[in-house]
Image (cartoon, rainbow, N blue to C red; front, side, top):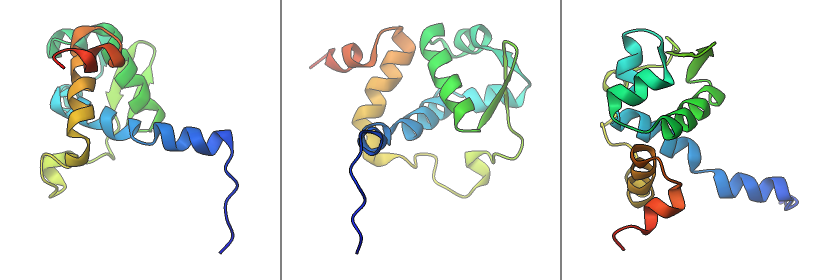
Amino acid sequence: MKQTELTPQRIMQFAWGYAPTLAIETAVRHGVFDLLDQGPKTVEELAGATKTSIRGMRAILNLLVSLDLLTRTGARYARKRRVPRLDQTGLPRNVFPPYQRSTSTTLDAVAGNRPHRQAGRQGQ
């Protein structure tokens, strides 16, 4: 078996490999996809409707755009119609159990407008 060279880029892939999972779960738990089913919305509208910070919501939305799950036109974010709703896939609502601890602090960071590493330290 040929070994793959360990490059800085490959190390970064390992380090950030969990980010898409956390972003998707955060959006699901805050009802972002459900809100976008009603039509395109700005980050301010979504943050207000979900009672989260604009800063955290913008980070999650931009990551979801980069994953090709949402689109952005001007200041408005929209759901891609080809992405199925979780309740229509037959998957359980909570499909992310290995990431529960990390997800909790990510949700706190989105809701509280503070960096993730600070959110994870509270209450410990």
